[in-house]
Image (cartoon, rainbow over all chains, first blue to last red; front, side, top):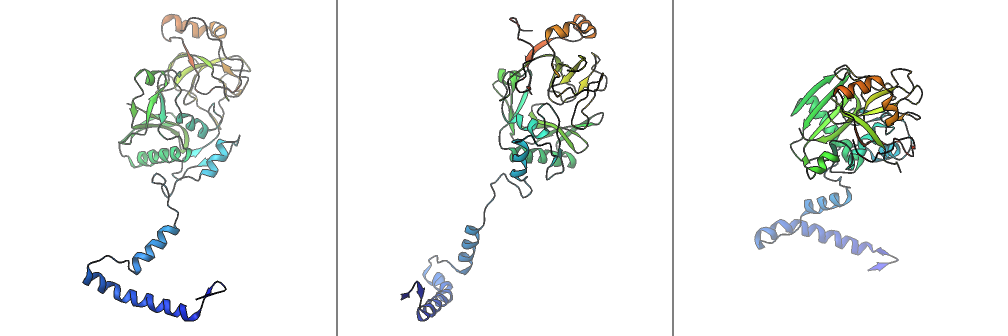
Length: 199
Length: 122
């Protein structure tokens, strides 16, 4: 049957004929015998699914590329990063870059005075995507309160689901209550800060 | 790894409604301002109802000399420095501002100029 690792032409033709006969008889056998046999469509979808890399559930089609975020977060890069929703993260804040400042809200600082909002996720791309979601929701005017303070706009966005908790001195005194709101501060399209909070 | 820094503060920011208003000392001219530890809004005196100053081009210039309030040698003010600021002392004595002590959110890495924590907390 096998010569030098290849099928002979005769066997190859035989297999093709058998496959064709199976595909012709498959619907008849399913109807008459009541058994479940895979058809051509099932086999095609099986091949397609296994050959496609699936995105994690949280990662939307416009989720930020992690490479660019990593470059800013793990170096002294002062480059401007623009999120898929159009928010610009520039250098600034005492963390040196607004992205680093945002990511500082991925962990609690229990001795920080007052409330310190902490994101449930610690992944930069997930946090940036969450801020983008808030920004889009704010622009659409859904479940948002808006305030102006000079050049700044302060949004209070209700996600309707848990996104983090309240840490810091105040939050830790109250056993870190859950937060489903995000406060987002921007200047034009420039990001200033964002963090989970409780109204 | 950044070291935690003690910071004197006098309340919380009305802009972001979260950040402690830390007392920041300009490293060039010694001017002391109220700096929000969260959103970097700055007030030059105790009038917190006045419009704050914001960062410009990624930096935060001192209202007095325009040196960076973020970069070194600017730092969180020490107790001694705070005692030498008339408007601050007046606001504290009249009760307009209440001086407290806490830990800064964004410590300057390896900065050894942060104020020492006194035996009794404020």
